Image (cartoon, rainbow, N blue to C red):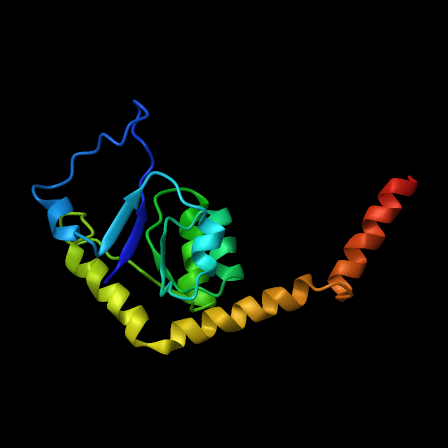
Amino acid sequence: MPFLWVVRPGPSGNMDYVYPSSYMDRVGSRGKIVSWAPQQEVLNHPSVACFMSHCGWNSTMEGVSNGVPFVCWPYFADQFFNETYICGIWKTGVGLNKDETGIVTRGEIKSKVEQLVNNNIHKANALNLKEKLTDCLREGNSSNKNLNKFIDWLKEG
């Protein structure tokens, strides 16, 4: 499947990662590896089928606000909590499982991406959550009114 992979530069500031032998040749024109991309614009593009994310809060909110299903690969701290919401509560994504040696294999990644792409349930849930978020942020929403009243009260004091 075609993919865009954002890989941050190494400590030297260069893209000095060593990929497995002939990896870049195997990727060919199916994938693009870059050091930066405008994530919000990428996630908003209609051709994006899913978002493999570490589940940081900003990435989670950007994925949710664009109605994109997640492949979750958290590393530490709140990322595991966010994964719990994405997979278990909102049901807008799937998590990756490590094998007996502690590695997430390419077969596991392939399986989970195919699961998202071939099953519209996560996409439907993601679009539903996007709609709910949009409704909450609309001007005139009671939560928005209450927040504005609170801000006005703070300004008076």
